[in-house]
Structures are given as structure tokens and as C-alpha cells.
Length: 204
Image (tube, rainbow, N blue to C red; front, side, top):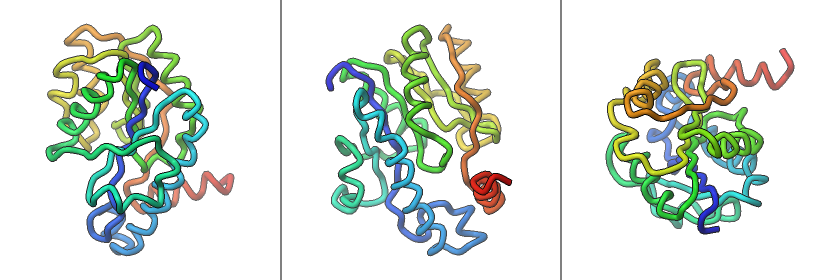
């Protein structure tokens, strides 16, 4: 699907003690890893409808590619993440994706309210806007996408903080990029986040 949209799905191998450390502090490393494993599969299944038009790439870390085979049917290909902070890894993935010639989106695996619909809206926004973000209620974002390669796009952002989205929107203003926003969703980092997600699922 050269020239079409590319979706980078950031995921880590669910090794106890290496994933969802804030949840692990409250529930234990084994439980946090089990939950994260479920979320990886859940998010990948939720975006399957997008594969008709979008190339889904498992952007993996924490283990060799063969350790991720249980999800092989849910992605079109695998790409290893480089070392470095989140900005470095995003920049590398976006540079690789834009070489394919189309718009690039990236998501994580801890926003369980994300569905293929959000990806379709994001791709549509990138027809007229330079950048699209899917905000989270904690000041970050669950999705970021760009229409074209933008050198330095991920510079100067305070990652994993309440300032992440604001910093990145400021970066966009500084370099003259137009921005679209998707609906705000919640991701899951803590026990309170998980309980709130479960409550929404029960209609409470």
C-alpha cells in the first residue's frame, strides 16, 4: 500500500515489570503485564477495519519480533523501535513512514476507547490539515498524525506530562503548521483510570 496512510502502533512486549509501571505499583507487575497484553490485542482488533485503506505497522520494543507472533495476523508488518526517548522514537517512525509516500498516524495501546472510526476521521483531517492530534484528558494525546514529513516536529515536547499536547501544539504554531483535533478520550495509566474505564463500559 505504497502511498496510502500508515498507522504506527507503539507496543512493548508485555514483560512483567517492564510495562505499565504505574499500574504495576498498585496491582503488581504480573497483573499489569496481563492487562497490557489484553490491551495490545484489544487495540489491534479495534483498528482492523482501517486495514482496508491503511497499512498497520506494529512498532515494537522490548523483545525480538518473533516474540510478538500472537498478534501477527493483526498487523501488516513489524518495525523495531530505536533506542531513545519517545520523541526520538516517534521521529524515526514518522521518517520511515513518510518515505512510503502517505500520511502517517501513530497510536499507543492504552486508550481502549479508540476505534477505527477515529483513524478514518484523522486521515480525512489530514487531507486539509498538516497535523492531527487525538487529545487525552490528562494533557497528552492518544493519536498524532502528519500529512508530510516535518523536520524537528517532535522537538521541544515534555513527554508523558500534563504539558505534552500543549507543548506540541505550541511547536506547531512556531513552525506554521495547521492542526485538527479529534474528540478527547481517556487513556489508562493508573488504577483510577482503569476503574473509570470499566465503569464507562458498564454504563455507570
